[in-house]
Image (cartoon, rainbow, N blue to C red; front, top):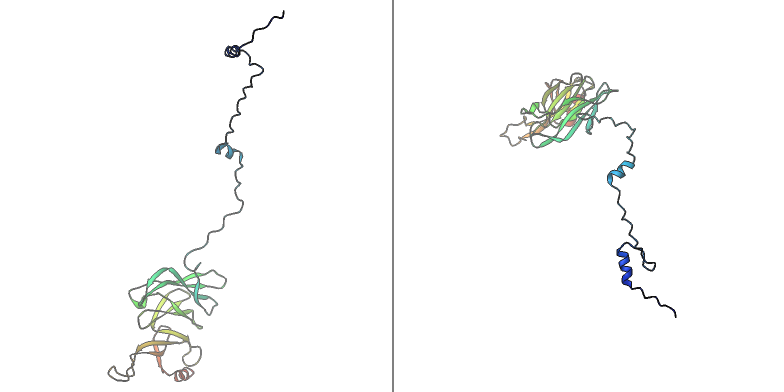
Amino acid sequence: MRRLLPSISPIFFALLAACGGSTPPSAAPNVSADPAPVAPSVASVASVVPAASASSTPPAPPVASGPCTTLPRKESVTARDGSVVYVEENPAIKDEAPVDVAPRSNLCIVRPGAAPKLLLAGHPADDPSKSLVGMSELVADPGADFVYFSTPAWVTSSAAHAVSLTTGAETFLTDGTVLEVLTKGKYAGKLVMSHFRLDGAYPVSSPKYRGRVEMYSVVDRTGKTVVKLPEDAAARKALLAK
């Protein structure tokens, strides 16, 4: 008669595992999960990225600034020695003029083979004849080292000035505007000027009185009147041709 082995209870295997016994072959193996990947730190990345090398290109030279360097030219004339004199306006600075405000203006000079240089700095003044605001209407003297210009000195009239190209000294001539420098005839070397002055031909009480009218005259280089010119253009031209 065959002897029967008693059946082994599952409880037996549980007790065996609790006591450190081996896992039964039929049991599923205990597989542990892999650890989650760790992102590299900024410091560790920086340590392996090569630093950018310094540029070998030399720094650009500084750009010149100030009067007569970067601002555009408004108008210009050529002096007898070939120098170019021009008006430079700085819209960032506003100066008081008789009827309005005007950008700061300077007179600059470019001598042959040289860089632009400040000739005369513009500035306001309480005395209209000394104000150098809004310099314009340049006229070069073909017989002397002077350039003439005008400023809006009064509400009804401009002021005429001269500037020496040798020293940069400025001189107020008289009211009005220099139109030209005569090179021929009796008045060669003198200046033709226009003025807006009160009518001197008729008294104020006369019905012919015209108030302020444009008049003309010949003056020397200091602004002293040499001769008054006719208002009529043909008569004026004939007189200057003598």
